[in-house]
Image (cartoon, rainbow, N blue to C red; front, side, top):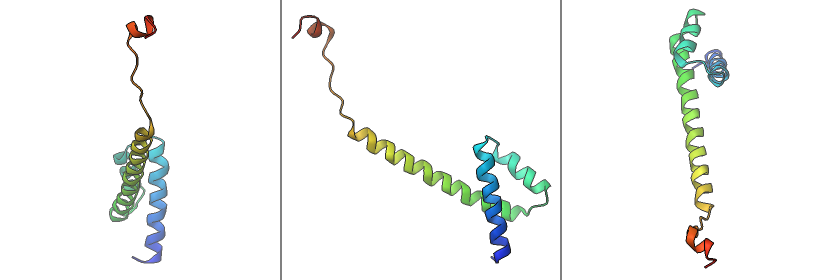
Length: 87
């Protein structure tokens, strides 16, 4: 991959990131890029990298969430009747 192609893929990756955050579908973004004359190969490569990044971020968030959940201590509640009779 030459420098020009690498820069173009970075631009496409930024385009995907920005517009996926806005809520556009992957298919609509791919169609728009192809209709603007972009290479399908470059589009798919950029999309592949962005999706891998997103999957990595999701996995990291899940691991953090699981770690936080394991630190929370849950104390059993007293039953209504024990609270009522102060036992």
